Structures are given as C-alpha cells and as structure tokens.
Length: 399
Image (cartoon, rainbow, N blue to C red; front, side, top):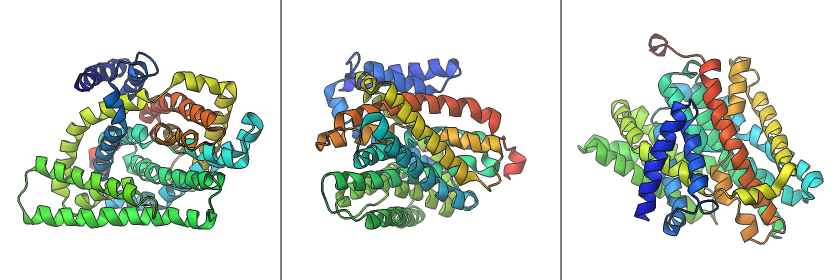
C-alpha cells in the first residue's frame, strides 16, 4: 500500500502542476489520474489502498471543511443565511424530481426507482466545490457579496437533503413502512443536531485552548481528531437518528474563528498545508472509483437524463437567488458552481445494486456517468468563469 501512496502523491503533484500550467483546474488532472491508475483502467493501485479509500477521502473532506469553517465569519453567514437555506433545498429537490419523472420514459424506471436514482445524482460534490470556493475566498473573488460563503454553506446542507430523500425512496422500494413526513422532518433535525454537536465541541476546544498552552500543530491534530469523532458518531447513530456530521465539522471551525480569531487564522494556515497532501488523496481516490465501462452502458439516454437533471438544478439555483443583490452573471456563476458531482455518487451509487434493487446496475452506471460528465465540466466552468464574473474585493473594501 505504501508504494501506491507514493505513486499517488508523486503523480498527483505532477498532474496538478501540469493542469495548472495549462490553465485548467488542478483537481481535474488529479481526478483523471485516479481514473487511469484505478482498478477499471491500468489497475496500478494496491487493493489495500482501495479498501481504505473511503476513509482517506472522508479525512480529506473533513480537513477542507474545517478549513472552510475557519474562514467563514458571522457577518458573512448572516448576509447569505436566507439564500443559502433556499439553495440547500430548492435546486437539489427540483433536480431529483426532474430525474424521477424523466427516468420513466427514458429508462423504463418506476417512480420509486426514479426517486432512488434522482436523489443519488441530485447531491452536489463538496469535494470539488469547497476547495475552489476557499481559494476564491482567499483571493477575495466574490467576497464583497459573500458568494464563496453562500456556495460553501449551501453545498454542505444540499448533501444532507439528497441523502435523506434517497434513503426514504430506498425504504419504500424495500417495502419498509416509511413515513415521508417524518423523513422530511428529519432533514432540519439532522442539520440542527449537526450544528449543535459542532457548537458544543467547538466551545469545548475553545475552553481547552484558553486554559492550556498548546502548540498550533497539536491543536490541529486535536481539532482533526474531534472532527473525525463527529463523523464516527454520525455513523453509529445512523439507524436511530441522522446527524449532519460534515456540517458539525464546519461549525467547529466557525466557532473557533468567532471565539479565538487570531488562533483560528494561524490554524487555517496549518490546515492549508495539510490540505496539499489531503487534496491529492481526495481527488485521485475519487477518480479511482470511476468505472468508465459501466458508465458507457448508460449510453445517450443516460446523458440526456443527467442533462435534464442539470436543467432542473439550474432553474432551482436561479429561483433561489431571485431577489438577492447578485447580478445575472453572479447568479449564473452559482448555477455553474452547483454542477459538480462526485463524493456522494461514488459513496452510495452502488448501494441499490448491493441491496437487490432490480435496476441497481443501471443506477450505478448513471451515478458513475454523472461524475464523469459533471465533475470535469463543473470544475472547469468554475475555474473559467470566476475571474470574469465575480468582482474582486480590494483590501480597503474588506476592512
């Protein structure tokens, strides 16, 4: 496994540098590298690395969400609160329902199978979106209207909504007695519980840092350990109650910034350095999950279905940003920023097949196809449009 880690690290750095030099998103190079090195192409990665791939990807995602939380101020969050809430629900629900309706005529799916597929594909990818939003935040691109913060906050909740509704449809298919009202009610409950967990643990960390002199490196490890335990708690309680663990992780960073701003800024720099390695692991291992031959089986109908879903999502973003202070180009940027899919689709795309859903193989193919189409398209679109459509805030305006 250690040889594969070395290979991933060296080639990941090379792919990142090469694509950056070509003025393309570095993460796109790492995603494609993962596809090439993965078990469905050259098969150059150790099986043991692939077995722990999900854990590595989760740790990398935790690191980038902690870094995101350490950069979101209370003022910025207040400015985007209402719009972020709308963007958390409306685009994903419209996309999921659009795919559910279209999957019948295109693929011969029942409404329930269509719902399962729709809400697998409907989840936006924090893995692709969050790192770029943090980069724009640091470059002060769009920060005058808190656009990176808007995308950061809403993308984290978007996944919670999609996964909860997906679970409800899966329960309906398997014949379980599922109360849709209770499932829908569990969405805000899981969000509240996630934030509350992050709030409590964040305050505990603040008190510890105030009372004891601890080196910043050790603080980073403590925060990372606590954040990992939040996701472990989420998994342990999953059968009883849903907790939006990743939202709790981001809340820890937010609390540290509010209560200990000087320390938080130093820690953000530390997490930025850790992210250099975590980023490579995240995107290369996400790419390694992609089975191109399975995606090809979805064919033209699959592409049309994903396109229909993206149209629905785009309409949802435009509805959510209607009446805000964003101009049309900034609203279009939000549409593009909400395109990428990867994390959730790679994680749960194979679940219906594993549980014996009749169309499980085709659902997996569609999940893979959605990653292949939207991750590069969204990453490239964000990279290309942000400098042109987002206003760069000057240091004087930031103060």
